[in-house]
Every structure is written in structure tokens, then in C-alpha cells.
Image 1 (cartoon, rainbow, N blue to C red):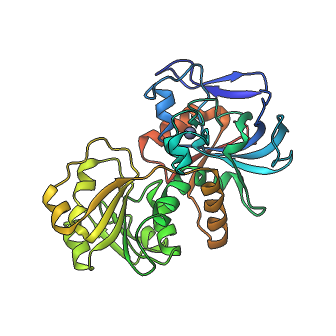
Image 2 (tube, rainbow, N blue to C red; image 1 turned 60 degrees about the vertical axis):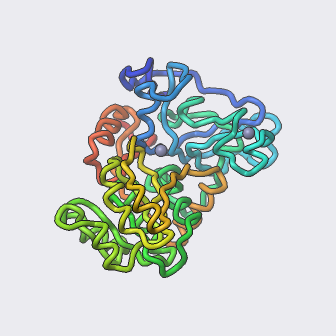
Image 3 (cartoon, rainbow, N blue to C red; image 1 turned 120 degrees about the vertical axis):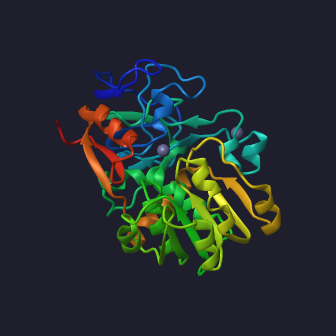
Length: 338
Ligand SMILES: [Zn+2]
Ligand SMILES: [Zn+2]
């Protein structure tokens, strides 16, 4: 099969021929149809995650068809369309797993494209636990980014304290944010998009935002306060200062949910205390959360806007994603040849 691997930390993405892998006990093989290119692929590319074994095939926004099933996989059959996201497996019996905190598994936390080879390939193998069922009318190439960017924004919002009608902010209108605005709107929130400059306002409004705040020409915290204060803001940007600048725009007991990996965020303790505001992070979710994301997206017309590349051009696709200029996600289509 053709695959794109990282030969060593900080090495180039290289197109190679590989043996088609066989699924072991509890795993399946998937013929990949599409794989999104996510900023977190840089963790594998640049060796920023501890313990990665190279060469490694990145990719954790995968849609494909089950092509072979290993032993002791009761629930899945060849021919079923499935998605595979970031969270691939957890042990199910350690203390965090027993409490339902699968992201905190201490025994067997497997991450697609990090712990094992991912979707920058014509075929991949994955634990059956990683699989999300894909709706029949779902377009693989258009939908692949929902397996990470989609689930992360969808799951952060649906597990937040916001209720229908509440003012909910989406900070940053990019790969995550353009999906966040759609989910927030379809969930019935009074959605406010916050981004730098005026140019993203028409798109944000088209995606459903009731309000738009240009954080360059105005103070976003003051503008949010004028709208009544946000119950929740999801921060999709990768800039800690931008996150800090909206904190004062949270209403009483409001929460800033961080999903953009930005390093330190300078938080004003007075703002936390005075409004009982909080800042928390959100981890994407498990395979059933992915399945819910796909179902909700199909039912409500939530769509990712993508730039499509053939697998052979994975390096160009990756550079395009890293440039921050893509509108808005980048997807590898296994069917097209360059
Ligand atoms: Zn991702
Ligand atoms: Zn566990």
C-alpha cells in the first residue's frame, strides 16, 4: 500500500510503499477513504509527544470501510463504514476508567497516529474500541475533519453548562471555530463569534452567529458584557493572550473552555474571583462521542469547509495546514492521484 510516514522526529513526510497491515485480536483493518490533516499531527511530526516510535504514519481524522476483522471483535463486520479519531483505546479497568474518565486512562491510553500508525495511508489497523459508525448519507471526504475538529467542539459545547438561549462565544473562526459556530447555533445557543478583523464577519453570520465581535477594533470583554455576558466561551485560538482578553466577558459563573493548544494563558485572578468565572480544558472524546458528532452533524447540516489534497501530496497538505491559511480544514483524499 501507499502510505506517508515520518521517518524520525522532525523528519520530512515521505511517501513509501508498506505491507498492508493485518489486524490482531480486538483490532480491525480499515481501507481509508479520507483523512483530515490536524494541527496535532505536528506532535508526531516533530516528536513532541513522549515515547513515539518511528517511523510513524500520522493521521487521526479517518473515515473508511472495514476491510478485515481480527479475532474477538464481536460488533463489527467487513463492509461497515467507520470513523477513527484521536482517542483509540483505554483499558476499561483502571481507576480513572472505572470513573468514566477514559481520557485519563493510566494503563492503555492509545492515540491514533501517535501510539500506532494512523490514516495517512491506504489502509490502517485500529482497535475496535476506536470505531464510530458512519451514517449512510455521509460524505467521507467532506466529513473526515469531524473526527477531531468536529468532536472536540461539539463535545465541549454539549458538556458545558450552557443551555439553549444562553450567550455562547466562539473565540477564533478557523478550523475549529467555523465548526464551533455551527454547533453552538444548532444547539440553540445565542452564538457570538469573536475574531480579529472584520473579514470573517460575513462567514460567521452565514454559519449562524447572531453577533460578531472584531477583537482588533474593540475590547471583546466589554462587547460580550454589553451583550449580557457569556455563559460559555470556547477558545479555539492558539494564543494565550487572546484567550485572556475575553475572560472578563464571561457572565457570573461563566466558563472559558480551552480547546486550542496555546501554552500559558495569563489569567487575572480578580476576574476569576469576582465573577466566580472558571477556565477549563476539554479533551475531544471517545468513539461513541464521535458517533454522536457524526449523527448530529448529518441531521443538522453541520459541514466542515475543506481544502482537499491527494495522499501523495501529504507534505504540501501538512504545510498548508501549518501555515494557518487553509480555509479551513485540510483533507487527504485516498482516491485521487496526483
Ligand atoms: Zn486533531
Ligand atoms: Zn484505564
